[in-house]
Image 1 (cartoon, rainbow, N blue to C red):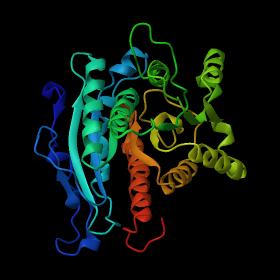
Image 2: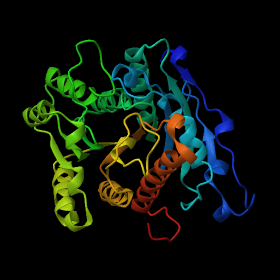
Image 3: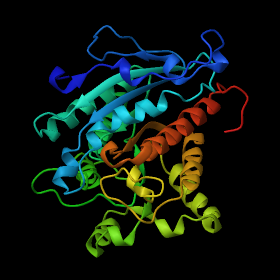
Image 4: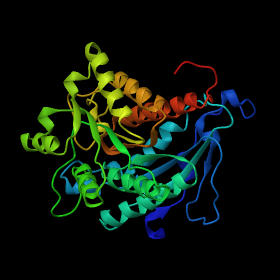
Length: 339
């Protein structure tokens, strides 16, 4: 892993309120987080349930996609929000910060490769990666890391579940961007003779051309329009997601913050007046995580530059809180609460 593209945990991002220094049930995440330096070649696999946060400091993909830049600083903004979350899990659970992969000199491709190496290493260490964007170009490197780990294990490549307003399947003749990642993954799957299985929930018609809908059909992409992610259609949505889950051995789960309206997520590269209700998103997260098939997660395109009162970073915090607690619930490592 090229050290130019990597920096270890910054403790300044993990500070907050302390209610007790002795009573674990009064602890917050900043008191439980520990550093994990991926430059250390002597690391050995962890036992039990452990989560590793990894930042991806890049909005080069957003720049190429002509979006509003600023997501490069998203990982730090999200970490600051995560710091004060209460520890609802048991002491057996570990929280680790594996630092950040950094895009240098607009070299997105190399930074994505380093991200892939970092994700593969986290999985090898028996950790559940939670990658903090950064632009949604994080998805290409993230997927490659999972797929390479699976190849070595002799496992089938993962299906992809994305909550997003955009398909992100644009052509990329001049290089990848934050609008092309899933097309890149589809092409990679074709080249390596693997199945491309992709479900996107939250698609907005006004944010995708007719041509993109046609490409989605050609690639057999499953999707749900944002307007159909409403309470009255929850049973149908749940059935469709269950069908997708059943068809997968493993799932890579990714969320783009622009899936939500500006009321909930003003700090994104492509502001969205309409969007997914966060309560509906939380239900989808629980449904996916309870399956036990999700192997890695990321949240992308939190842009502090436009994030009034850290609303978007706070939403990302809530989504990650749900991911962690539901995974712990599966492992009977939650302290007797209803999540």
